Amino acid sequence: MIEAFSVATAHHFQDAYASQARLRYEVFVKRRGLDHTHWDGLEFDEFDTPAAIYLVWRDNNLVVRGLARLLRTTGPYMLRKYWPYLVEKGDLPSSPAVFEVTRVCVDKTVNPNMRQRIFPELLCAIQQFMRISGGIGMIGVTREHLLAHFLRSGIEWLGREHIIEGELERAFFVPTDRIRPEWHCQKLAIGVTVLGAERAEFTRDAA
Image (cartoon, helix red, strand yellow):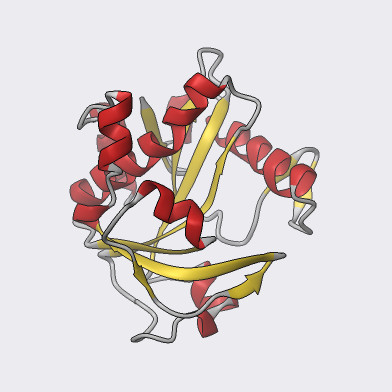
């Protein structure tokens, strides 16, 4: 089950807000060695605002092991501020129906049999959240093979690859109806609903 919350609703989810920041620190600062802002084992940035929605996968001990952060493109977002040159096809989106997906990460210490479910479930939750929120698609920046491995079709690449934080990455757009990784969902028996109804209601109020 994927849980969704914002700063306004994080109190419903124990320490999930801090736990997702710990995972980001482990993945981006310790493992990848990136110069991200952090404090006392918590990674954060300027886009961790009340407008951000966090989708998290937690283990039985309520530790966040997978994360995706969503921001509507009507406000400040990472692609627009730092890497607008990655979008060579069309204009940078500015719409309440287009969400940027960032800080996507999965804890590599999780048992492989369980870990293989985390990112597909996050993608399913993004799709479910988008449908609840009237979203038409997601944008972001990623290494091409990482996204293409899960989404066999439906990805619109918005420009050429560039070195971003030490990796060759590209900007992308995926319409809402193509976000679900069908092959992986069938293989792993992931159901249509992965985002709890009560979580969706909390998030709808915040969005």
